[in-house]
Length: 553
Image (tube, rainbow, N blue to C red; front, top):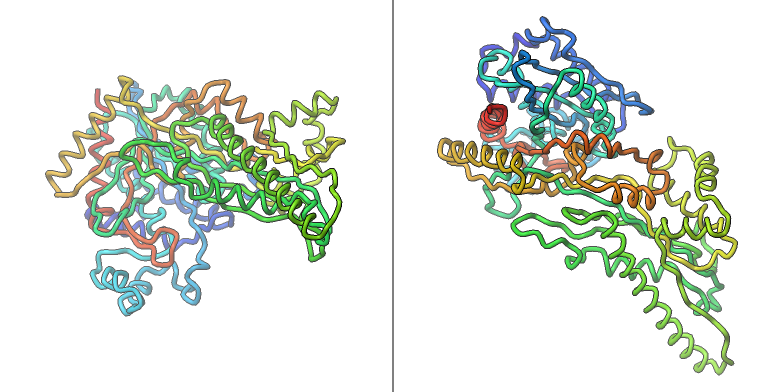
């Protein structure tokens, strides 16, 4: 493979590798991820530096991963005069190709897709891009095989020009970014080991997850010095069932879940007011009752959860705010039901009944404390419930609901309540502060290199703090206090089993997560394509300059 890269320009090298990587299927959660990892290892072993240093390219099998997936590492180690190290990180898994429909057979063939889209009159923009010859099509081309190609080309460049690399360079390629972030989470202990054994000082990690125009006519290239965090706040609503002939006496969890969705979903009032950043409101990703089949009984319980982006707020702050909303929803529900029942009773000339529509709202931490006061040990209940689930067959979020359900039924009273908790995944925000000396130095160096590249290429860059979507970079640092760690784990059922996050290692690593993304359109769509003039030529050179600048004293 290495001879195929020699004599080519930067853009030719990146396109060559992108084509090879796109052609290899590596759908998330399939054996293709392992095959991609093996291919990457074999490729890296053909690079001259690693022929002389075979111990500096390796794979790490992820602990307890049922698929036996692997992280891929390659290290250029300078002499002992410097400890400074830049990490290039990227993920090699992709989403599937179901969205291609009848074109699935060519989803990984750029040439055939470009020919198809050149005649695709249903979308003029896509057709024009295909006809221009400046866009590379294919599943994973944008997210993010082209990003891997950029990192590999720069790795090769610094191998061949060691005098231009003033420090160490570590390439880390991970599986499973598209689902559970298993790869990056499994890599953290390896990063700690490398730091300690090779005396490395991690200056920053450079990811190149894709960027796209944010509005029509937007030609800015967004550079990020951190990444947004994500929480998955869950609501398990336990009501009181009734026959539909007496439905007003019920506590219907579907009404409460619907109102929670209206109050929380797409509510921009819940977004943190951060200036000049792309910030997103919560989105409901799951809402359903627990009825298994048709009958004339109202639902007994319902579940819902939200995608909730966080920037500076802690998980505890978010949970407490959402609890206030849930309490208000349940209070209004009680008043409404009381009024509706009153109207029902009068219309049908029925006598008064002693009915109560009170619903308790509690966090998981509070519910566990309540059970403990009853002499019930929550950890035993959770462990017993875990033994009954098959993680290979069940979704981890639904397993979390099963554990919370077991805790609810452990309460002899089993009164109507809403239990709030967190479920997988959890991604902390990772941001770089200019108020600290090290952060200010990185910002200044990045601004200098962006200004130089703007003058040279006429590109327009926009520097922002938070990569607005989910990113593996979230796991390279954790800024929360010990109290926040405890609060998160206390409100996350079986976190160490369902979604182990080595928060202590993350605090120790504290690696700034930069994102210099490849540029394109249609991420996770069948029209996915990467813009070659920027992604294959401008971006690799920009990342080289930033790498050298960050490693210099």
